[in-house]
Figure 1 (tube, helix red, strand yellow):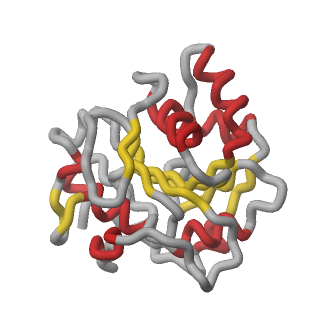
Figure 2 (cartoon, one colour; figure 1 turned 180 degrees about the horizontal axis):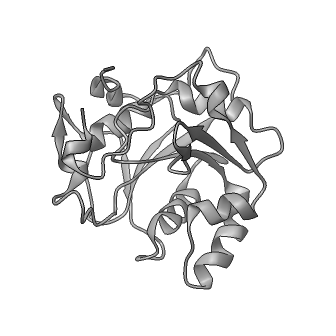
Length: 204
């Protein structure tokens, strides 16, 4: 089993000189209630660091990094922002992050995906073309909580939020999206890259 990205990489954020992909900001959605986890999953320590630190490590090449959602969380070099429209789940978190982002493109992950590599974001953005949303497919299906979102998605998102909410999967179906299939990503990523820890026992 591969180790998560080193949390020490979270001390500085900057673009990768080796990548021709667009510049991007990074956001960790950290406002979930974590009922199944039984505690604050972002603060859960795993292999020497919190799950939040592991998530931030995957975004160390971003122009800036943000933690989105209540409660307020402090981390060096990372900006905390509240949901602009609280209580509307992951879609509301993406909305808040896009409104606050310094770049048109935004890489989004949940705080419970400790094995995402920074390579993923470069691969997705290199395949964006005319899409406004680039979503990877993992071994078990689409992964919209490990995807890249463009600021021009805001009208699609706000339409749904104003109607009371919606899911990221529904946004993928409605907006100009590109799916990067697992048959391509599986050649570059480990099988556990998209592991999602809903419970502590999900972590190897």
